[in-house]
Length: 194
Image (cartoon, rainbow, N blue to C red; front, side, top):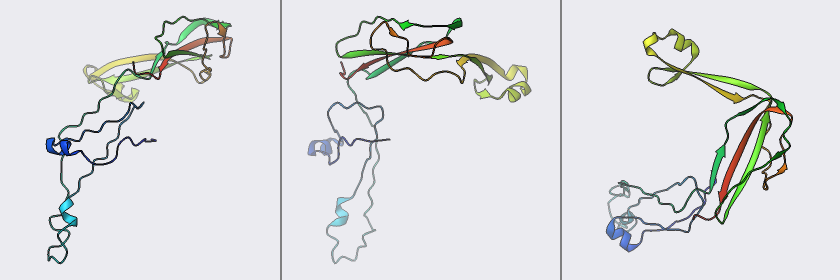
C-alpha cells in the first residue's frame, strides 16, 4: 500500500486534559486508514544524570486505546454496477452501446463492455453450517449434515478484457464481436463528496 501521511505530531493541551487525541485533516480520498500510535515516558530522559537509577527502571511507555473512531464525509468516490452474464442465444454482432443516465453535477458515468465465447459452471458444495467443502467431502457426509450445492455460471477463459470506457451513448462497440456472452459495467465517478 502507498500511504499518505495526514498528521504527525503531538496532542493539543486540551486533548491531553480530556484524554483524547483528535487529529483533523482535509478531505482525502481513501479506502484504508492506518494509525500508528506512539507512547513514551517523558520522565525517562530527564533527572537521571548521576543517579544510581538505571534507565531501564521505571522507563516504560504504557497505554491502551479504549476506543478508536474514524469519520469520513460524503459518498463513495466510485460506485460500480456490473450486469450479470448476458447470454445472447448465439454468436451475435453488436454494433453500438446506447445508454442514458441522470447524473448529479460533478459526477461522470463510464460504461465498459467485455465479451466471451464460452460459459463455465462453477459448483460449490456446503456442509449444514454453510462452510464450503470439496465435492468428495460433501459426498462422504451423512445426508443430514450436507448443505446446499450452488451452481453459478461464469464467463470462460476466452473472455475479452474490459473495453475502454464508452463516454457517449451510441459509440461503436469496442469489445470483440461476434460473441455469444456479454457483460456490461457502469461506474459512477465523482471527485466531490456531496
